[in-house]
Length: 401
Image (cartoon, rainbow, N blue to C red; front, side, top):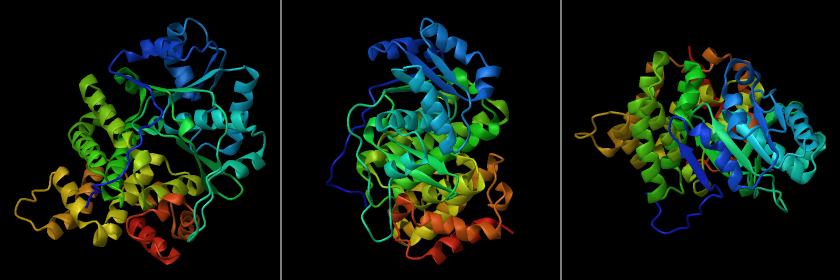
């Protein structure tokens, strides 16, 4: 049942430019901020193998004061420290991310790191969200302004629409959450042209990450009519257009529909509590190096099954959106069909559906479960997670034969 009374908070994001060719408008977005010293963050492959950096530099009139091209997956602490030091030395006044979730999260952490003076590992410990099961989470406040961010997306992860970031602690082998509305990028560029260089596995799996957003938003105990409407439309667009991107399909309209769906899936996320699929994904990435999109591929259907006793109504709607003919079904029957439908959709894209396929073994399950129980979004799962054993059992069901 969706909430019929509540509060909706708009994010601090001001502008989204979308459509093929919109990257050329990045100079206008930076000008809105009055910035004079933009600093770019990207992966080495995008810097060396595409002309995106040149397009950005030209659109900015040659104003780039630096480029950090050592972005890596899951945002290790050492990468944040190195990138933050480079931006600080360049006296950057706006940070531009070029890439997917890792590049976006890295710029968020650079902005936070400069504001909070993070210069070593102890700084992360003081700034991270802390959660102990049964207690209220502790979210350290951020005082003062942060260096503004502009995000240029090359995947469908939608991380550029949030005010939180994950960073991997190499000692504890887990991913920590950092949260503040001021970390939300001021502007986003969704240019369909840029996804031509994105390999199928990354593009399609990041699209499943967006499916994960939609499903967990609709299953959320804090779902609202507005958030449900956005997520419902997003899910139907992804089901329609994401398969068209398989085998190198990059029609501009198909790509833009997927990009807009990902925006919808994340638009209202600060108003809705997520759950176990995202929490498991955080720790699968940190401990086992599983790419973000793949984590959703292998966990989402199993989390849906776990949540079924308390989410029958939303899952019955999800089944219909996934193409199940629910007209003659009861709500319970339709809800039972939702998780298999999602699993079949993932499989139809040629993506992994088991933990074994992404390199996770039985020996990893206990550590992943232990870390997940300290993850804030696991605490907000619609069905209460009562024990580590429950989490291990979900992971074991996802392990595969």
